[in-house]
Length: 414
Image (cartoon, rainbow, N blue to C red):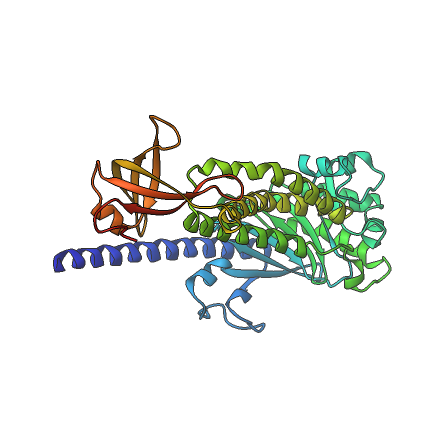
């Protein structure tokens, strides 16, 4: 046994060493690519602020004190200038839940808030049913190709009423790199490229984006200055709706588990009867959510997220109420019958066992009933033994098992 433990420890150490080695090699490769990019663009590398606040002028070799996961989130920033305008490039390697990303931010504070991305089928569907509201520039070709997320009557819409700004967006999205979104924020203008792969890192130069990005920033500076908080698209908070759906999912799960444990039904299929109530209530809820959320550029995305959460939430709450209410609200008198054990099985779960008796059915001649019992009854019983089963009719007319006992001179075992 000691030798086996030593073997496991050895395997663990080797696996850890190989993981650290591969991550270190990956980091080294990315950093080397960034250094080459800095040479091409005339910029310099500085430690990423994901490793803490690093003052300007700090030497590049400073070691990050945060865990390795934080170190991988952003290796370092490339900083430079184009015609006097500072910019920052940041590369984020691939993680389990997100593809690799490269962002270029032109650090010119301004008062606009909004974003531009390519318009997709989902965006068009949302607009066609009146759910989301998008800025329209009057240029049909541009409006069909790009989705503008911002205040329809605010400065953001004025910016793209100008043909040179629309042309700048078209130029940026025509670059031979996977530009996903152009984002206006108080910090400046950010271009988000994803998935930004190794081959992109080898050939990318942030200055390729600069002329069109500066055109957008220069035109934005001519617009009426409005505080950032006033140009964010007005919206109703969707948080209460998500909290309600989460509460229904959690409460329904607990009620389902408790109901099936305390009041085990003979036929679990009766739970599907809850669907005749679940679907109408779900429809009314989504109808309300639709009208509550509509009118914002991101309404269709939030509504779809809410739909995905609400579907299982209402199903769990409906079946949970049926499972628990069938026993908790039951006022029927107990009924007792006697039958024989046909077979017995043990099912191993992750951390426990389920003990099941297969009995001759007293409801359906020639059929059988499967009933879970505790370990004591299971161990004391044998095939062919007689048992006494006490049931109730159930509030929703779904019979459930109240008690099972072995027929023996010693009487019920529990």
